Length: 320
DNA sequence: GGTATTTGACCACGT
DNA sequence: CACGTGGTCAAATAC
Image (cartoon, rainbow, N blue to C red):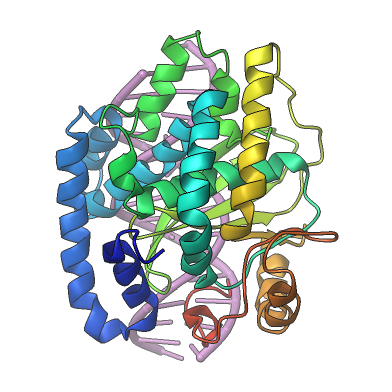
């Protein structure tokens, strides 16, 4: 991990360990640099996002762009065939395992109750994206990458049936369910943004919140409520099957690094409260214990009670 | 024309 | 009571 972009790790560490005041400036600088870097690197026609951003609030362009970047990365990863998945698994696995663990270790709380394996997939791809975009890996991503933005990816999927995984890639988030994004918000506490998704099934109240850091890396995924229906099994051919398979592989290797939480499937408000109450007490003990893999009861656990956890402090935008 | 995403605005809640 | 934040809605936009 030392070898991997001391740059990134440093930055990340600073993020959480430095005081907000002192880091705010450097943070902005970093953000700017990052933006420029991404834009320059991608240098691709970022149709929708930019357009949307332009149409919407220019002030948010910054964060928005970054965010979009994150999500698309995820999608991109998902789109990759098994081969790519394995590749990632290998590259990232060896490269990240250690560091990623460290990186994410800074993101306390992470409990993924016995969710369906499908949800694991979500966390997987997200882990990948996080890792990929966060570390020097960013550099590893082929410049050609479909790394553009969620919209681009989407369109790509739509237009190219060769993939045959449209729905899966598009909104399912890899967990087998279809999610639709209904909101995004900038958060200060864990500097970054949160994306709100809800199950596209009208009868399903399942929701999930993806927390991303400044680098648009998905640092945490919170599931709220559970699906009251089976995941739309759209696996029609071998390709998809293999994709899923590969995803799982990655899950096993990455899941432990990506915070995934499952909130009680009660109404949002209750969930929030419970979360608030449970976090501090439950996180440290149990999570530390199994901070490295699947928990029989919680499914995935990728967290360790971090004393430095800024979110354990009063307020810090996590209770709600 | 339908669906999904983006994003500003709104409301509820906690401090 | 004011302020900040989280979560959601809905219009605009893109595909």
